[in-house]
Image 1 (cartoon, rainbow, N blue to C red):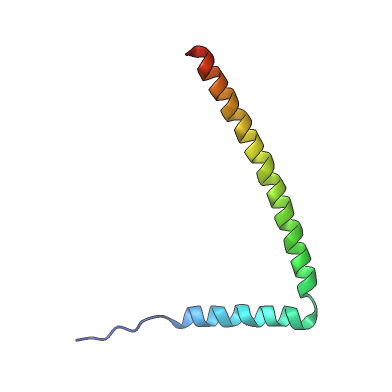
Image 2: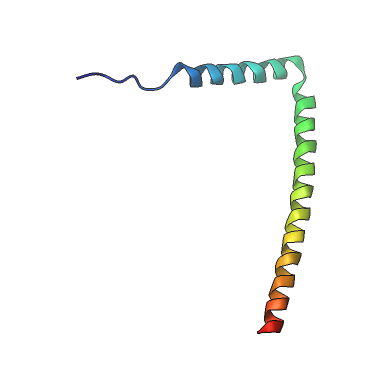
Length: 71
């Protein structure tokens, strides 16, 4: 019976690369800048998501109101 190899080297290499990048950023002092940029981006994304959710609620409310009037 033939044995199958499980896993791959690719996930290991990807993890090693990510770990090396994070280590470099922390050691070089660039981590604070990166975290600040990530936080700013996430804040902008949250604001946009809140706007879109508000628009969606307005549309649903309008549809519900028009449905109630026609019933």
